[in-house]
Amino acid sequence: MNLRDKVVLVTGAGRGIGLGIAQALAAEGARVAVCDISARLLDEALTQIQALGGQALAFEMDVTSKPQISRVVGEVVARWGTVDILVNNAGIYEVLPVEEISEAQWDRVLAVNLKGAFLCCQAVIPAMKEQRSGRIVNIASSAGKTGGTLAGAHYSASKAGLINLTKQLARELGPFGITVNAVAPGRIDTPMIHAVSDAENEAFAQRTPLGRLGTPEDVAHAVVFLASERASFITGEIVDVNGGLLID
Ligand SMILES: NC(=O)c1ccc[n+]([C@@H]2O[C@H](COP(=O)([O-])OP(=O)(O)OC[C@H]3O[C@@H](n4cnc5c(N)ncnc54)[C@H](O)[C@@H]3O)[C@@H](O)[C@H]2O)c1
Image (spheres, helix red, strand yellow):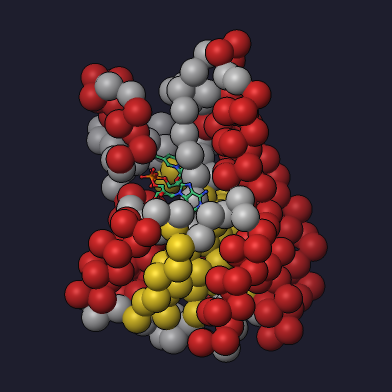
């Protein structure tokens, strides 16, 4: 995929899909800034990536904090010279009836899932514009396309916003050689989905034409492709990785 020594920043990479993406990009030879709000998860993630021979550095970073993002992007650029690829993966999830979502819960989910991606994009765009190339991949959700069947309204709305942010930035940044795409996963087997019962997750798998939940690797393969030169004429696209659960 020609990602050797590309500089990548992945948010929420301490576990789950983000860790899978960081591992897959490192396996392609990229230099990966593994970012997460949890220092404990970062330690474990870095050990796993380095054990496989990947080039990676860990950064404790809350995507809702503009100062923390600026500091991390500054350190990555100082160390590796630029940021070629940004993967906005950090996200939080809750399942609640709309009337039970507090204002604080609404604000937090929107802050992490939508504003966090916006702030990270803002932080890396100057370096990408300067080199007249870049790749941004946002991890959305099929809930952002259809409304969630097993997600709160705040989560689904945040992912719909992320899909539209992807389309808007694709238009704005195309003239600078920067592509902006999203991946919309269906149900992926990570710690996140254990917010609901095994029976509910199993019912999801049964409804899926391919008959199983997805894996972080399923999502990572699509991200690696979108981050690569092979996707150089694809921008503003939302790639479904959902086993056929949603076909549109
Ligand atoms: N698992 C699924 O079924 C599924 C489906 C569709 C979309 N997604 C999306 O994929 C992404 C990854 O999900 P996952 O299943 O791996 O979840 P996860 O909960 O297993 O991992 C999320 C990671 O993000 C980190 N994080 C949370 N808040 C953060 C913040 N403010 N700043 C930085 N890092 C933060 C967590 O510490 C954790 O390491 C999310 O955006 C999620 O909405 C997941």
